[in-house]
Each structure stands twice: as structure tokens, then as C-alpha cells.
Length: 85
Image (tube, rainbow, N blue to C red; front, side):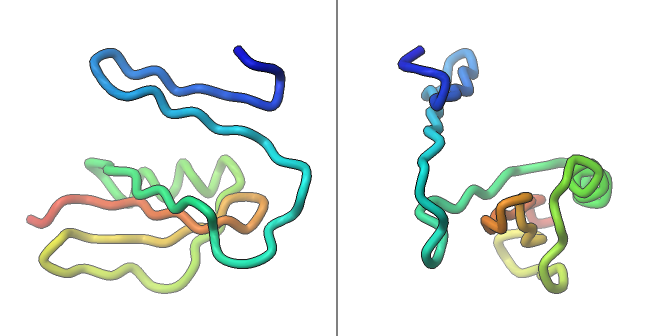
């Protein structure tokens, strides 16, 4: 651990994801946009909302899958994604 502003996600056999809290506020688009694969998008949206996320816009489906854009509590966009049927 570098200091308390750093948080890590360590998935066995996968690349470590590191996140650092920064003092400045968001001034435009996200510096990073995460797409999180889920098997049940309805359930995942419900869980995310229960944890403080907000749904942004309608759900979209195309050849790449089904996507729902959400906002985290600080207003950063991210997506829940299911693979195409």
C-alpha cells in the first residue's frame, strides 16, 4: 500500500487494478470509464443503486451487448454490460 489514498483490486491471475483518490474535483469527462461485465443486468443495476449509484439514461442493446450507464456518488460515469444473447 502506498498510502490511504490508494485502493487495489487484486484478482488472481489478472492484472491488479489500482485507484488513487485525488484532491481536485472532476472538471470534465471521466479520466477513466469502467465497463463492468455482469450476468444479470437488472440485478446488478439494483445492487448498484442500493450502494449509491444513479441510472443515467435508457438501457441500450447492440451487437456488443446490453449497456446501462450509471453515475457513481461523485457523478462519474460507468457502465454495466451483459454480453449479446
